[in-house]
Length: 128
Image 1 (cartoon, helix red, strand yellow):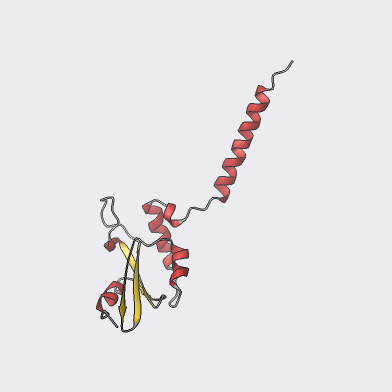
Image 2 (cartoon, one colour):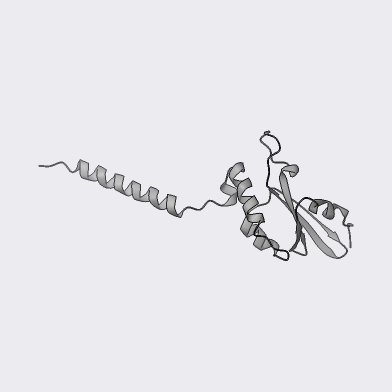
Protein backbone atom coordinates (compact mmCIF):
# COMPACT_ATOMS: atom_id res chain seq x y z
CA UNK A 1 0.00 0.00 0.00
CA UNK A 2 1.41 3.32 -1.06
CA UNK A 3 1.50 6.26 1.30
CA UNK A 4 -0.55 9.31 0.37
CA UNK A 5 1.63 11.63 2.45
CA UNK A 6 3.88 12.74 -0.47
CA UNK A 7 0.80 13.52 -2.57
CA UNK A 8 -0.76 15.56 0.23
CA UNK A 9 2.47 17.46 0.89
CA UNK A 10 2.94 18.07 -2.83
CA UNK A 11 -0.63 19.37 -3.14
CA UNK A 12 -0.19 21.73 -0.19
CA UNK A 13 3.08 23.01 -1.63
CA UNK A 14 1.48 23.58 -5.07
CA UNK A 15 -1.43 25.45 -3.46
CA UNK A 16 1.04 27.59 -1.51
CA UNK A 17 2.99 28.43 -4.68
CA UNK A 18 -0.26 29.36 -6.46
CA UNK A 19 -1.22 31.63 -3.54
CA UNK A 20 2.17 33.36 -3.54
CA UNK A 21 2.01 33.87 -7.31
CA UNK A 22 -1.45 35.46 -7.06
CA UNK A 23 -0.34 37.79 -4.25
CA UNK A 24 2.81 38.86 -6.08
CA UNK A 25 0.99 39.48 -9.36
CA UNK A 26 -2.20 41.09 -8.02
CA UNK A 27 -1.30 42.94 -4.80
CA UNK A 28 -0.82 46.67 -5.33
CA UNK A 29 0.30 48.47 -2.16
CA UNK A 30 -1.41 51.73 -1.33
CA UNK A 31 0.75 54.78 -0.62
CA UNK A 32 -0.02 54.38 3.10
CA UNK A 33 1.49 50.87 3.05
CA UNK A 34 4.84 51.97 1.57
CA UNK A 35 8.05 52.68 3.47
CA UNK A 36 9.25 56.29 3.40
CA UNK A 37 11.65 55.85 0.46
CA UNK A 38 9.06 54.17 -1.75
CA UNK A 39 6.40 56.67 -0.67
CA UNK A 40 8.72 59.58 -1.48
CA UNK A 41 9.41 58.21 -4.98
CA UNK A 42 5.70 57.49 -5.47
CA UNK A 43 4.74 61.04 -4.44
CA UNK A 44 7.31 62.57 -6.81
CA UNK A 45 5.95 60.49 -9.68
CA UNK A 46 2.34 61.38 -8.88
CA UNK A 47 3.10 65.12 -8.65
CA UNK A 48 3.82 65.05 -12.38
CA UNK A 49 0.23 63.91 -12.99
CA UNK A 50 -1.45 66.84 -11.18
CA UNK A 51 -3.44 69.55 -12.92
CA UNK A 52 -4.73 72.88 -11.67
CA UNK A 53 -8.41 72.59 -10.79
CA UNK A 54 -8.37 68.95 -9.70
CA UNK A 55 -10.72 68.25 -6.77
CA UNK A 56 -9.12 67.52 -3.40
CA UNK A 57 -10.76 64.08 -3.19
CA UNK A 58 -9.22 63.09 -6.52
CA UNK A 59 -5.80 64.14 -5.20
CA UNK A 60 -6.32 62.15 -1.99
CA UNK A 61 -7.32 59.09 -4.02
CA UNK A 62 -4.26 59.49 -6.25
CA UNK A 63 -1.67 60.31 -3.57
CA UNK A 64 -3.07 58.82 -0.37
CA UNK A 65 -3.11 60.40 3.05
CA UNK A 66 -1.10 63.61 3.41
CA UNK A 67 1.77 63.79 5.90
CA UNK A 68 0.51 67.14 7.22
CA UNK A 69 -2.41 69.46 6.52
CA UNK A 70 -3.65 72.92 7.44
CA UNK A 71 -6.81 74.85 6.59
CA UNK A 72 -8.34 78.30 7.06
CA UNK A 73 -11.01 80.61 5.71
CA UNK A 74 -9.88 83.62 3.71
CA UNK A 75 -12.19 86.18 2.08
CA UNK A 76 -15.16 83.78 2.04
CA UNK A 77 -13.01 81.04 0.51
CA UNK A 78 -11.72 77.90 2.16
CA UNK A 79 -7.98 77.32 1.80
CA UNK A 80 -6.37 74.00 2.60
CA UNK A 81 -2.78 72.89 2.20
CA UNK A 82 -1.72 69.24 2.12
CA UNK A 83 1.93 68.27 2.54
CA UNK A 84 3.32 65.16 0.83
CA UNK A 85 6.84 63.87 1.48
CA UNK A 86 8.97 64.27 -1.66
CA UNK A 87 12.60 64.62 -0.54
CA UNK A 88 14.96 63.61 2.25
CA UNK A 89 16.72 66.15 4.49
CA UNK A 90 18.10 64.24 7.46
CA UNK A 91 17.91 60.73 8.84
CA UNK A 92 16.08 61.28 12.09
CA UNK A 93 13.18 58.86 11.62
CA UNK A 94 10.65 61.68 11.30
CA UNK A 95 9.04 63.34 8.29
CA UNK A 96 9.12 67.12 8.59
CA UNK A 97 7.46 69.83 6.50
CA UNK A 98 10.74 70.82 4.92
CA UNK A 99 10.83 67.30 3.40
CA UNK A 100 7.38 67.76 1.85
CA UNK A 101 5.83 69.49 -1.16
CA UNK A 102 2.74 71.53 -0.30
CA UNK A 103 -0.43 71.37 -2.41
CA UNK A 104 -2.78 74.35 -2.03
CA UNK A 105 -6.54 74.06 -2.51
CA UNK A 106 -9.11 76.83 -2.73
CA UNK A 107 -12.70 75.67 -2.19
CA UNK A 108 -11.52 72.06 -2.61
CA UNK A 109 -9.84 72.67 -6.00
CA UNK A 110 -6.07 72.48 -6.53
CA UNK A 111 -4.69 75.98 -7.24
CA UNK A 112 -0.93 75.58 -6.64
CA UNK A 113 1.85 73.24 -5.57
CA UNK A 114 5.58 73.56 -5.18
CA UNK A 115 8.17 75.57 -3.31
CA UNK A 116 6.33 78.91 -2.85
CA UNK A 117 2.89 77.42 -2.26
CA UNK A 118 2.99 77.38 1.54
CA UNK A 119 3.99 81.04 1.60
CA UNK A 120 0.94 81.85 -0.56
CA UNK A 121 -1.20 80.07 2.01
CA UNK A 122 0.43 81.94 4.91
CA UNK A 123 0.05 85.30 3.15
CA UNK A 124 -3.71 84.88 2.70
CA UNK A 125 -5.69 86.82 5.31
CA UNK A 126 -7.65 84.81 7.87
CA UNK A 127 -11.40 85.27 8.18
CA UNK A 128 -14.06 86.21 5.78
